[in-house]
Image (cartoon, rainbow, N blue to C red; front, top):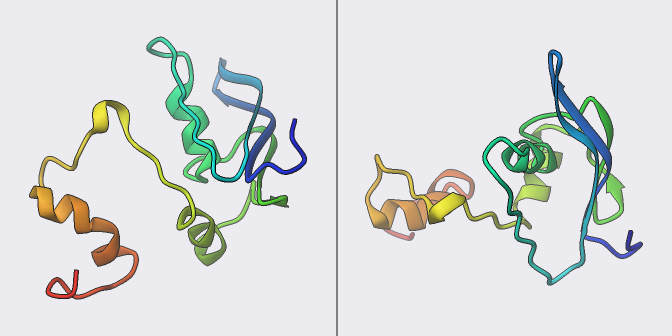
Length: 119
């Protein structure tokens, strides 16, 4: 593992009842680098990303962002981390209930509180 990783997962485990989805996952992403996660259906890609983004909490292991343990962070601390990360959903999915413009402006409108005219 790189000691200069911006995002690092260390020995991350996640289970849902008896179903063990992540078993000791180790990943690091250096600043300015991209990471593509590929795998078959049900292999744990989405669960890993949800843990990395704080949408789920691992049963074991650590999530580090910029060297800081954010495994259990919530609220503004977690939002500050997410503001520095971009994620592209499978098949470049958009919110089907929004127009293309609303999809593009989504973060500006929701996270930044920008007015529609300014966005």
